[in-house]
Amino acid sequence: MTLKKRISVGSIGFISLFLIWYFAVKESDYCISFKVKAATGTVFQGIQEWTVAQLLKDGEKYTLIEKRDFEFIKQKMEKENVQMEYVWDITSINDSITKLSVGIKDLNQSWYNKITVPFYNTDFKKEQIRKITDFKKGLDDHLQKFKVVIDGETSTKEVSVAYISLESVLQRKAQNMIASDALITGFLYNNNIEIKGKPYLEITNWDLENETLQFNYCFPVDKNTKVVFDEVIKFKSLPALHGLKATYYGNFRTSDRAWFALLDYAKRKNIKIKHQVLEHFLANPFNGGDELQWKTEIMMPFAAD
Image 1 (tube, rainbow, N blue to C red):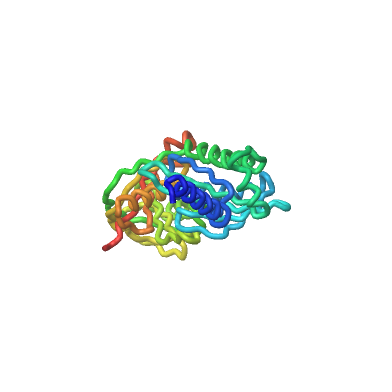
Image 2: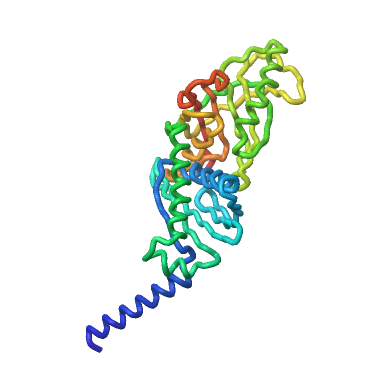
């Protein structure tokens, strides 16, 4: 066989394998990728919040098919006769950059899209670019509303607190905390117990899969405070901890953005940390003002080997 014929046969074989992969193996009709300056968990939350908003905005109903950690989401979208599949792959690049790839498939005319998308600016292609651009703009706007600084390894001191135990989904922790503020501060005032500093939030259980929390909303008190029995308000000491610290600037409702940053940092550095969090609020949201000036110190303790 001549060299020319070998090249021809090889080219035909390569093209054949590519076509088999493109039409039979490759799941998406079209893929859009971009990078954002955010932790993977922040992007993950942003995707979920954006897809919920699409039902109100465009009448699109998104159903979760699969999700994995903060790295992968697979959804089915339905609107009238349209059925689409979105696969979001989320990858941490470095301390501040995450890459997001969105694979999109039209379940009703996938072959047509695969044939036309590489060569034509079809309605399908234009619509997907519009939607993902809309998502990215919303995410970029959100990222302007807070700042996270990774401070590294740190330790905390033991502190005596009065606290109330709460449960909620991740997205509503701040609302539940604020709703309980008058209850715990009123109890302390009525019992002549002085608050000795800024409040803490102690996350005792963080279920990443179901995005639920169990936590204690705590106010520091003198260690010699006489304990007053109550079925709701309790007293204890927050133990001294050793772990990773971040400083968060922004609204307390989204302080979990710092949690996600610490998780990404620990993963890249191969540091084992517990899925527990201690937040120390150093600003009073009831005073209002510029939210980017609201400071919260956040710590996640090291896990035992």
